[in-house]
Amino acid sequence: MRLMGLDIGDRRIGVALTDENGVAAYPLEVLERTSPEKDLRRITEIIDQYGVERVVAGLPKTLSGQIGPQGDKVLSFLDKLRVRSTVPVITWDERLTTAEVEKLLVSADLGRRRRRKVVDKLAATLILNSYLNSRKSGRNT
Image 1 (cartoon, rainbow, N blue to C red):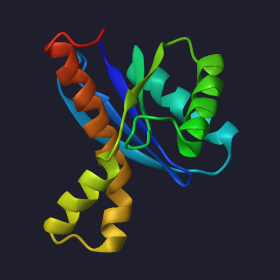
Image 2: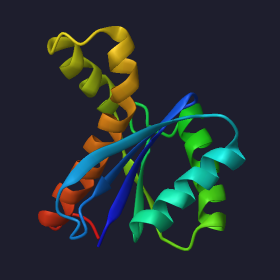
Image 3: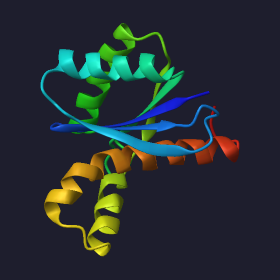
């Protein structure tokens, strides 16, 4: 089962995929946000092109676990994706994933411009890996 991971931000959407067996996640691309319609079209193209069977989207929460304004934006976008696509779309707690990736890239001495090009797809990969790991340990469906 191939899965897609999404890290949805205001300016960019990071996209990651798993292999066909749903075992290993890898970064695919970063979508520069243009309009909701174009963003949704590209995501559904990827779903169709790669035969994605489930989408795992990072849901930003506050440190206390509440859904804030950014989380509301993500949920609204995902509602539109669910209308456009027949594959299940689930959310996954993404607290601090982008910050974690940024920290790793800074420690790898990657410049700001180069970090901006990869941070979102790496965050999507981290979200997807977290989901995969939880499935292996039996904590999620």
